[in-house]
Every structure is written in structure tokens, then in C-alpha cells.
Image (cartoon, rainbow, N blue to C red; front, side):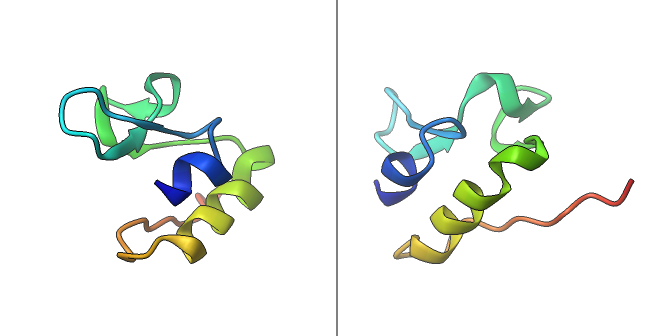
Length: 64
């Protein structure tokens, strides 16, 4: 998957279904589809979002 190659600090391949998912350390409530990542990973998440061929990755910045 493109997102894993562009942003391996945030995305990994699931061993169960072969789809990409958020790595465990960034998951919200252990949900592989939802996460909260630090600001310094913003650029790689954005690159993965833009390159995703199925447009399934969505992200938003959290206001502080």
C-alpha cells in the first residue's frame, strides 16, 4: 500500500486482511482505523492522504 511506504511511522499492513491500518501506538481506543498522531508526522500523513488511490484516508488537525 502506498500509505505504508510513504508514512510507515503511522501506517502498517494488517496481517488479518492485508489492508493498511494505523500502527498501534497512534490508535484511538485500539481502533486500527482511527488515530491521533503528533504534529511532526503531519507531512507524511498528508502525503499518504494525497497519494491514496482509493481516497480512504481522511485527516484533520486538532485545535489546541
